[in-house]
Length: 302
Image (tube, rainbow, N blue to C red):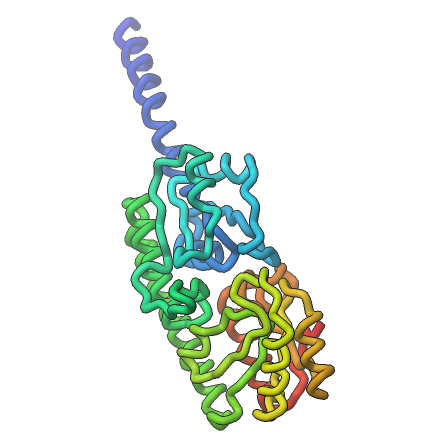
C-alpha cells in the first residue's frame, strides 16, 4: 500500500510539472502589430499559432494614433512586436519605452529599396506587392525567432501566402497592361502610392503630403488644377481616411468627377471592400484602372 501511494504521489507531481508546459505550448503566441495591414499579414503567416492584436485597427489612421495605457499593456504582454518602420510609426519608440517591453521587435520594412522624398524614406512600401512579399519573409523570420517549435509551419504558410501574392502581382500587372502608358495618371488625396506607381508604371499626383497633416498652398492647388486640365487626367480618387474637401475642389475647378476611393493606410472594416491586404490591392487596382479609363469605379465611391 505504501509503495502504491508513493507511486501515485510521484505521478501527480510529474503531471503537475507537465500540464503547465502542455497548456503553455497550446496557447497562441501573443503578437502585436502596429496597424491593420501588418496585422493581416502576420495572421496569414502565423495561422492558429498566433494571437495578433493591432494597435491601429481597420479603418483607423496610423499617422494620427495616440498611444494609450491599454496599448502599453498590450505591448508589454507581447512576445513579438511587428512594425513597418521607415518612419511610419513615429509613436512606437515612446510606446515601447512606456510599456517596458524587452522582447523582439521586428521591422517588416527593413531591407526594401526605399523611395526617398524630401530626404526621408516613404514608409508606404506595402502598396507595392513586390515589397509586401519581402514583408512576408521577414514576418516568418520573426515568428520563427519567437516560436522555434512552430517554424516549419510558419515557413510553409509564408510560402503559400507568397505564392498568392506573386499571383496577385501578376494579376495587377495584367490589369495595367490593358492601359496605355500615357493614360496611367491619377490624382489622389495623399502622397502614399509611390511604391504602387514604381511597381506598375502609374504616375500619381497627390493633393497632400504622406501624413495628410499639411494643407497645400493656393499656388500648389492652382498648379495641380492646371496639370489636370493640361494633361487631361480623368482619374481623381478619394481616400476614406482623408477629407474629400480638397479632391472635390479640384474636381469642381477642372470639371472632372471623383471616380472612386482607394485604401492605403489601413484595411477597411470587415464588411468593406478592403478587409484583407489582398482585397485592398485588388480593390485599389480595379478603382484606379476604371478611373483612368474615364469610368466611375463600380463600388465604394463615397
